[in-house]
Image (cartoon, helix red, strand yellow):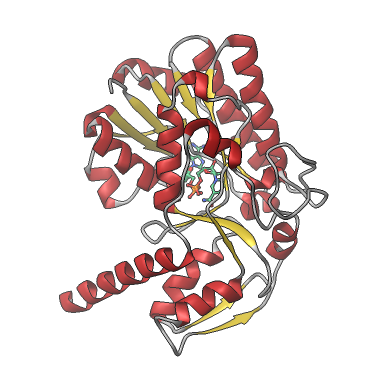
Length: 322
Ligand code: NAD
């Protein structure tokens, strides 16, 4: 695998773990992390890092030339909850960065582009259960509008200019290594930390809000599998539906209680409830499973076992240092 990869937005929740997996696969020096802020200690110490604004096409091009980059993973974005506070800024970042990278691919400076979409492309009029790849798509959030527009730009650059751009509609991504960056599914990360630290959690969504979710390891594997698929197997050039699990805040709390019996949860829905209500509760990703053999590994139980045992190990390491 002879690729040199540039990651834009590498210090975020997904970038931190995706970069490190790519470094294992492609070699530390062949994966250049970049962001407008520094990332975790592991990210910074395991390979090259550059400060790059993902909307700054000239600086991206300079870096591509300097490192002889062949692929760009564009992860920089403003996420759903934050984008509702800063609509214009979200549009400028989410669209400006994508068009900069697509143009660099069109101009043949890079061979392949990865850009994630989201379940936010769906809206209140979309059928909620087992939402199909092709269905009613009328997003009601700024973030969703930027993602659906981005999908069509990707398809346009592929059809018109032959750009090899690939994309997944991620569900809510759950991890314990890096805190999430302002999304509506962030509660499903915070809940584990609060369960360990405080034994209780106040949830900003109501107890029966069912949303599609995925453990970080599955999301990273899906991303790399799609990027490594043969071009002829990538039949969808907007973005693939991608799914693993779906659950409600009440169900995740019950799973946590199996490990921490005195854990309690209370519910205080805020503005994010309206965003969540506009999204599907489960996703049909049969096209991804058929076209490039996607399979998830983690269900709610396995993910909870994994996260809680790692957080507990981290906690006892910290207490033994004190
Ligand atoms: P995040 O907010 O954790 O990370 C985004 C990173 O982009 C941050 O490190 C931030 O510093 C950086 N950034 C912001 N502005 C930048 C700029 N101008 N130039 C360069 N970097 C900049 O987000 P994430 O969760 O890692 O998401 C990565 C991608 O995946 C995004 O496109 C997001 O929309 C998509 N996605 C994420 C989820 C999820 O649950 N995390 C779900 C669906 C889609």
